Length: 395
Image (cartoon, rainbow, N blue to C red; front, side, top):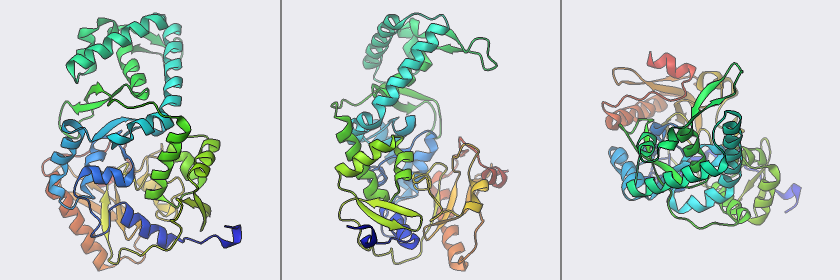
């Protein structure tokens, strides 16, 4: 298809696609967390609460959120929480373990292991052969236990308690423990995953577990498969979007686009891509919709170029200085405000963009706030990365 013949997909249609494919519009909500994760490819897992809140926003029966998500993650093992794109922790269908590891994990893992060995050598710690022995012993202990904290593994393998000085003589000098750094590397290498938390579903303290067994795939084929799935869920997207979400080099993105036969389309901001056969018109959801999505939600964080769903002037209130999005209020595919939970449990929200937002929108948003409060109940939620509006509303 020539440049002039490319179909144009405007912001309205992109919002319609988002509503339907991310299970946010009425009638699209999922029956279980596996459907949610499959529809979005991956849920941000850095903040444990994000996973549950992202699922709850998309379930037909939100009351099942905690029980069903914990079942999928820790009992049935149909979802897995491990390092993935951009060396970030995600939750995704277990069937994607091999794809994520081969497409993104190997490169990150090699870099992380080299960094660990360099830091250990500079800090006076033992060498690579010693680390290999400790690693094999720790993995064997984890296999025996099934799940374990770093402290429990250190009781089985005391050498995990070895410490070394990091960045000696510099302003950020510190003491690192081998267990903490090694387990992070093993996570990037796809050998261990995050297990059941020590506390509630909002707890950031967790156990480690052996990673699901998975074949070693060809990196190029794995990249093509991951990009195909993501474009099916989030297309159209630009090269910049794809490079940002995957963490790949632009040459890898282009090679994967070619491998899947992606179709180029015209966007308001330039050229975008969809999977083959997906360039045609998409019918909208039909009914207006509202959503309260959590901090780091995969929809709010899905694209690097966000002007088509989030006005630039709203960003200072809704993002922290590192670019992490806080809790957002959505109306018909646009971010129009933010929400928070107060110490007494009340869910409160504020509109920052009122263009085209009337009483029906406020009613729908209020209903979503009540729906969220009904299943969160007495649990208190504080985002790991706090944003200006969230801090203000929760005070």
